[in-house]
Length: 466
Ligand SMILES: Cc1ncc(COP(=O)(O)O)c(C=O)c1O
Image (tube, rainbow, N blue to C red; front, side):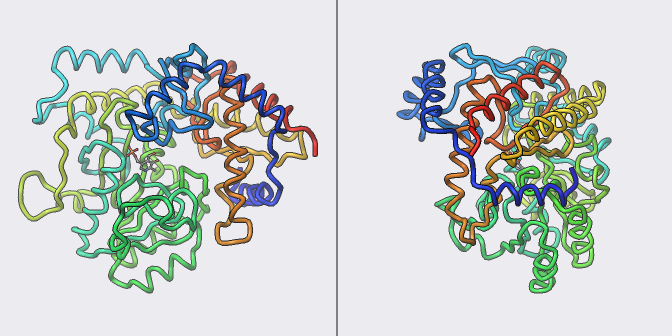
């Protein structure tokens, strides 16, 4: 679906009152959800006295309570109560070969058995992994492994500042670049300002310049107002939140031009798009040449300790190993043999299996079929769109509400309703991300698609005509 149509349809969703599940029906759905998930609830309740909030990760937080998973295989997952789910969360994007993929697991287990998990010194897997990334990503000549996407985003900023000898950074509102102090502003939803986190000194934001998504005038003004001061422009190349705020077709090109003209480094955050949108990442997909590339979870395909900052030799070489005056980066377990071995073999297997082409073709089919289903209910403005194997579905549009306008307070109600749909979807055996997003893998098949269709048919059947 083209950008203009996506934006037009999002507007329609936001202008249409969100459609809650009628209270009596919702009550029954809740009862059904609770009855089938007693162990998950127990674990959550127990967890509250051990883990703040009872659950560790943002991705795992869901209403009415988070589900505890037992295992995953292919595109399936099973929770601790034995319920099965067709999974489209895929660990928040990195799983494109399918969960627990034997050919990858075998290689990793071999490394653990033969080499051990880590020595704190270099292993050959580091080279193998770096070479695989460099071979595939057009702008990348050097790679430095870290332990998460957040760390890699932190490092990219430090490198850009050190290289340009400037302090300021431009970021796009609504984008996600991990939880580092300087990125936690206007997170997820443009205009939310500093509401997302306590504990960050306001002075941290002195060097942050923000622009609204796809606001070309604001972008140009940001460069004009901060002449010779902007070290880097950092962005998610398909738009904030992996395209929840979809990128305008000319945005990346214009960002690149302005960076070149102003001696600013362009940082592509490819934590989600790298080795998912294309083997060469979003930079190849859009034909843009960033200076720095941030990689995350996908470079170990779900194995722990995954992150890398990568880029042009001229820029990256300022962080040569050892002590001295250079951007200081660290991480005892960074570049350990397991993560680097998983990285090398995952990229090799993605390539050998043509996993991106398969996942993309599947996503295209899924989006077309679900949109056909949605079209049978013209009273509901629901729709789906995708950037390759990254799918977004828009039902209540809570993320697109203008927080500075009269509709601001609707965000909460719209979010609640999306979460109610999500709860019903879980009961129907469908798992996705935050009530708005689905990732596909090379193993998804017709059966999985049938589950998506039957789930949405069911949810729509609960939404009686107004
Ligand atoms: C675009 C983007 N950047 C950075 C991150 C942070 O990565 P991590 O969770 O590995 O710290 C994420 C995580 O989802 C992401 O989607």
